[in-house]
Image 1 (cartoon, rainbow, N blue to C red):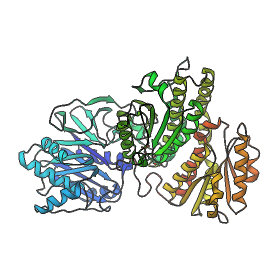
Image 2 (image 1 turned 180 degrees about the horizontal axis):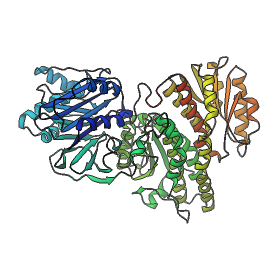
Image 3 (image 1 turned 120 degrees about the horizontal axis):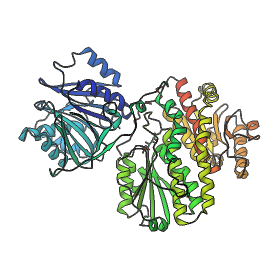
Image 4 (image 1 turned 90 degrees about the horizontal axis):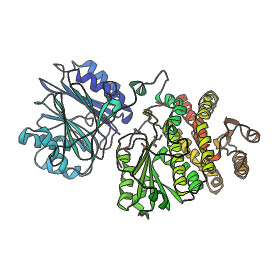
Length: 617
Ligand code: F6R
């Protein structure tokens, strides 16, 4: 949510900042801006709307009198103030000597704004960020030390922020700060980067430095220095980024979302790879929990948001079945405000693709204060949520650029299955041959996912056929219910229509009144084998909606010879154990959303009003 990039070094800083913004645009696209420094001072360009507007602005200008030596850039997801040129970042101090970009929310901004207004400072925007620009300018005026000024600024602020700032009279220096928002440094020979994520600089270097909470970072062509808020030097954690530049390209697909749908077989295989040794022992990535602590767990809370929350709901079915430990799944944004009962025997599983979602991070911190153990499932190495957890499983899905999650859902579910089996094994509640049987089924999933991914054409025709409807309902039972919720979320996000997921048995208690002649209803039909009671119940629920005029689209298992006669259209997925089926049945719904939104002419990768990595509460 908001992307920021800073570069200092011998190359054309403006072009590098622009390229970084292109790669970060998925984090926000309400406006974009760049401040570049050079011998003549600071030049600022900013424009509301997508990055193309800023590019056009730069094209039309002389791009500054001299080649800039450093630049900072920002792509915005609006919080305070509408998307407009004035509210776009960078913001500049009253004396014009400082420009600054910001990701996050300054919670005490209105009090600070009144203070500044009373001393005669004039504001040009409605943003909370401009407060920081003016304060930094005033601090810098005291001693001309940008690093110290940034430190003093941070000491006055409450909330979440990442800042990058440049000063007119130190054209090669960029100072950054980080509290509760992501910031990573990139290191190359005589050139340095600061960015919200490594995608911004991966084409230049794969050497990165992880920055800690409440740290100030200063870069110039001479080097990088990190300090805490008291001014003491601190060490960053260096690491190498193990994906290449192609990961941030569309690779011939029309959209990142289609690319990411097609990456799912490999992504799930990568999630599972190496987790299970030849003795059936299941290993997690980083575990700071003892065997005894795993054995002592008597309650599990899963906390997450959006698609990750749906992956959590899928997990509940598997985790309770395999471990026999009660499990609750909660929206992270609600969790800490209802005073949940937690103790040292409670395991809190935090699921977050980005590892930076503020609602989830705050829920994790709350759980920690209650002595709960934290295990996180994340796709982002070194991000805040894994750093604050006792154990971590990385999903290894590779960067997800499309704002609507696809491979995150499948890989999170896969990682959660591994966690559930790990706990079952530690507690001795599953025989090793039972674990081995599930592991074998899991290992077979990537090929099955491949076959569903390859069947996109059938959905394409279907989606175009129903795209005239302004309401689509999704129904499911058991693990099909969270998949119904996920299908509805995808369609809402991309097609901007009313889409809602229901537990199929719940329809008759109210929502069935939404059905009119022709209303598309997508039914996630359970396997007819094994849990055939569920299958029968689902067929009854389908008949109920059909009797009221619904147009029924069924997602059914291959070999199910009953469902098709009750549906208008049936899409088949390969057979799989019931608990694992969601990582197959979710895929047609991803396609459905892409095709439906495509038929309406919507932007697939950057749906309106949204942004990836939601770093505000
Ligand atoms: C939906 C989507 C969001 C995210 C949610 C949590 O397609 O992408 O609902 O799932 O914002 O994000 P993470 O997993 O990064 O915490």
